[in-house]
Length: 327
Image 1 (cartoon, rainbow, N blue to C red):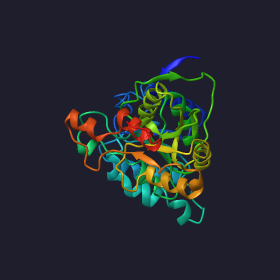
Image 2: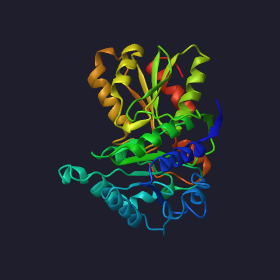
Image 3: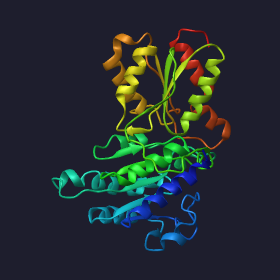
């Protein structure tokens, strides 16, 4: 099977869907003439033209609103935010328009739209450009929130997101666009809301999504050197969440550690911990543990970034804690 970059997988998904359905268009800052801020849309202007690959001003509220109106009138927009930090400028259109219009119209209007772009830390970008909003958007009924961790998932999930009749938040990472992985040449789609058990294990359930899966994989490898078998689960989406897969895993391993880049209060890991203790309390041999970002705006200095974010050492220590082993 061929190996391609994360950005190439996204480009293939977009291009294949745009060839399939002429109602689909891409709109955002620098997506056309510049070939995309992260080169996701490279070459797409040449193929699809300026009516379907559309450069916008630096005005997220405006072009998000245009996208919502277009979706309500029969088109299928893919709106690229250069970063989800900038989506806060447009959050009224996402939350109060896209997410609610089906309910408010009694089903007369749907809003098939995808809002996509990078989320979270990407290096020395400081507090205003390093935030995670997965849990913010997952809190809103009417939205689906997808966070792929590898090129294969990125392509299959983006194609499904574009075909979904409801608004989808599709969150990527600047630090993953160059990642390589195996992606089939033939068409495939992945179900939104179905987690992936990527490694079987019996001692602890390790859960994450997005680029934090890199931390989880590395931690699982370190634990394996000491004879600890971690079952690793990639959520893939955080609304809907595949609770059943998590609960069944905990019934087998009796312990769970969650790794998440967001701040701790009202996070996805908070929700997972609640559900597991609610549905699998009698199977737990230790409290659910979670690794999150420090409860501060992310600093600029590399040393402070490292101290703030989840990492392998913290994850290994947490696993040993729930196993009642010395770190």
